[in-house]
Length: 460
Image 1: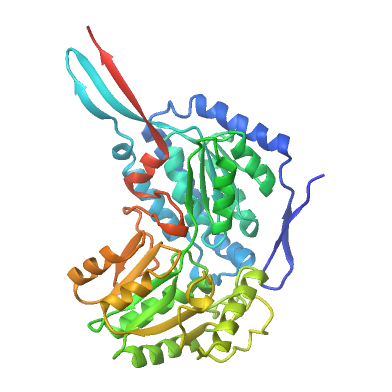
Image 2: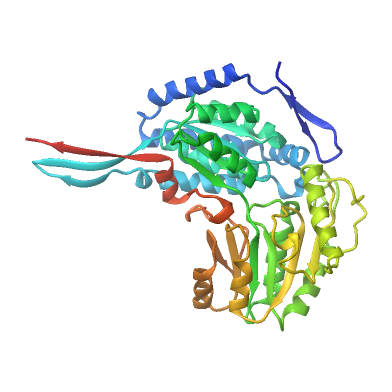
C-alpha cells in the first residue's frame, strides 16, 4: 500500500490536500504510454500544430489567474496581491513558440544533384520534468513548452508542496487538445522516480531543486546515458560599484533578496557594496525591509507571506542565529507575525558578516541577505566567486563596459547589470558549479531537448 502525500499549507499548518503516489507498476505503465505516444503521431505533427496546442493550453491557464493566485497562497504562501505567475509563464511560452521553427530547423550542409547532407533535430522521446514548488508554473513551463513543441512527450512530476499545480497544468493541456498520453501529470515517490530513470523508462530528465536532489537524479541515471539537465539553486551575489544609482540598487536588490520570502533560485543572497556607499546602502536596505508587512498571504495588504514549509524556516533561523553568535548584526526587529518557530519569518538584513559564516556560503533560500563592504572590483569578484554555486550575479554601475569586464570574471550562468532576479526567455538559463548544468529557454533549449541526427544521402 502506498503512503499518501500530504500538502501542508504554510498559512496555518492545515492539510490542504492529499494524494497517493502511483505504484511502481502504474508509473511504468504511464511511461510506456508516453513512449508509445512519442513513437506515434505526436512527433510527426507539424511544428506549427504543436505550437498552437501549447499556446492554447497557456491561454486556458490565463483564464483563471485569480484561482492561480489563491491556490498558490494556500500551497506555498505567496501573497495573493502578487496575482500568481501568469505573466512570466505566458512570456516564456510565447517566446519559445515564436522561435520554434528556427530552433528546430534542419542544418542543411549540401543539397545538390549528387548529395543531400543534413543534420536534423529529433526529439529524445519521453521527457521527465521534475518541477520545484517555489515558482511552480514558470519553472515547469520552461521545459514543458519546448519539450512538447520539439515533439517529445512529457511526464510532469511536481513538488509535493505544489501538487495542485501539476493537476491544473494537465487540465489545461488536455482541454487544449494535447493527448493525455502526450502530457501526463504523475505523483511519484523518490524510489519510483529513481527506478523510472535507472531502468530507462524515460529518455531525458529535467530537474530543478536542491543539490541533493540533483545528485540523486544523476546517481539514478548513472550508466544509462540518459541526459540529466539540472538547475540546483544558488547563492547569488549583487555588487554595488561607486558609480551606481544607490536608490535603484537598494530597491531592486532588496526585492531580489526578499520577494517570495526569499525562495527564488536566482534570488540575491549576498550583497557587496563599495565601502564609501556601504553605510547609506545599509540604512536604506533596513528601512526597505522594515516596511514589509509579514502576514497571512490571503490578506491583500500582506507584502511578505510565510515560507513554504516549516523546515525551510528552520534553516533560515539557524543560519541567522549562527551568524549573530559569531559577530554579525541583525538589523530588523522580529515582526509580530513571527513567533520564532513557525514558517512566518522576519525579513533580515545582516552586517558584520564574513565568508566564514554559513549565511554567506550555504544556500539560505529565505528572506535574509548579508551585506559586506568592499574596496574595489577585484575584491568584489573574489568574494562573488567564493561560493560553490553559480547561477546569476548582479552588477550595479553606470559603466556597461565595466559591468561586462567584471562579468567575464564571475563564475556564473547569467550576468545582470542594474537588474536581478529575472529570467529572460531569449537568453540561455544555465549555471555552473553546484548550480548544475543545463540549457533552459532560448534556442539552446531546443538543442538540449532534441538530439542531432545526421543524414548523408547519395543520390546517384
